[in-house]
Image 1: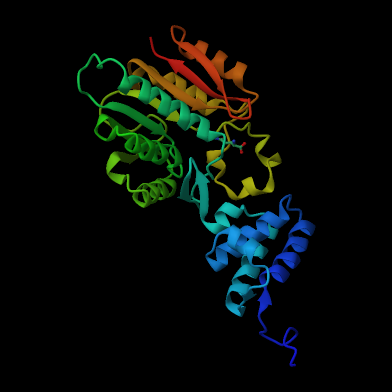
Image 2 (image 1 turned 45 degrees about the vertical axis):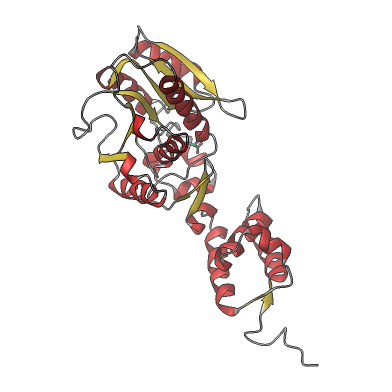
Length: 309
Ligand code: GLN
């Protein structure tokens, strides 16, 4: 019987490609070489990772094999899997991601969860003092749009469709485009008003809001170069928070009295070692306001909450 495995253009199997790619990725320094290989092969074959695992004997034609090799080369240079696949899961939703914005992190799901709880608490409680005004939420520096889109999808599913308004702003026009693409992709573009602007300087947004949510850059400048290689592919302005990491958080806190309604609140993501510094910044900028820090799912301090009097 003719033996084809060595012939030019002969189909390789899923198992063989995975084995070889895993070794190359490991040697290139990936900490999750097998998972990376499975995700990337699934990506070029347009199938779930579980399908890849179930069919190691399946042949892979020359075209997907070449596409796989190109993805591997990118990964071996340290590019995040999420950028190579153009996709990242966040809050149970698939977001488009690329170099225009930070890749959504699992710890930020805690921020969305806290925002969701706050909205539910208010909307399911006693009628609001101002009658039927929708609950207004502003996602400051929305990046890929992960926070506002996840909130919009979730609140709609919970049946709060007409009871909230979402605003999302972003200084980077490229990131803003990506956020809008994600809103359109998840069918909530009509629920979110987008505008470009630096932090709270967004003249297009009318009036005050009930809740500000933000995942600002908070990594200290001299820590940014020590982050995993993958982070070097992300926009530096989405990570670098100045000398102690809290420059942007302080600017944001200082502006809150001008944008929050009475009884409003802000939920701001911080680094796990910044709880004390963030509360001190809040006490200084907003002496009459209450502040607290919520832990993420891993038990690490992650979200600063400040409450307007
Ligand atoms: N959690 C991110 C990181 O450590 C930082 C995100 C941010 O600065 N907002 O890479």
